[in-house]
Image (cartoon, rainbow, N blue to C red; front, side, top):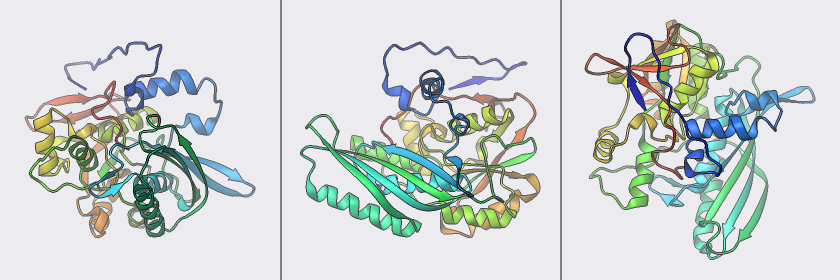
Length: 352
């Protein structure tokens, strides 16, 4: 959602109250934020939870670890470039990496719908095993439940991960500061448009495949290039880059300004979004991250990431500023400026 800036910024958008959960509550946008704020955080009293990061840094004896959990409900289960099993491994590994930790172990829980073909289950579990090997993690515990036909949509997977925290490298959603450069590690919107085309049987006349990947090696490249000086890391999955930037702006109480011309949106994604009336800034990603680094290290960081296969399209897309704190604005190709708000609901549900 956007609004043109004129004078003082004021872009409050009312959100209707709901007495029942709606699909938009899982969007990663304003409804998701309201669900957490109004129905979870008042009951679950935890400082780590209230940070709303990609994971929680907690102590286990004298060792600090990062815990993260995620549930995957993507439709369809298999798609170009991956499947629900690969997403489950990479998604949780990436959440741990975004907290500056080294992924080590995962648990996996499966809710299987009666009637799911065993050959499909075998393919998905096998791809999970391959993804875990690539990520350098082990699945060490798990659980399975089977529900009646029509009550599980094939397969849902939950993964919980444990990573070893690094005391020298602690990117947090609250740590962005004015003067930081905003970087993105790769192309925007590829995963979401791939899922949409597979789900609806659309042919955009381009070869699209999900960008799902283990991002930990690329985070290590960035960490070394900046000598651990990374303020914030987030992977823009549900809600896309726009929602992620809004969350960081709010958590750090800063303004963020991005440049439309610098956004790495592939031609196929841009064309599909234009055809369908979607905004690529809100389309889900599974193989990129957003990083906030000091301005003087930005060029070095981009150059280092571009030297890695996962970071070839890395670039600077904006900066952190003192103005309009809590808001994200974009300088458009026409020379104007508009607010990039969080969507109330979801452009495309069941994306991850």
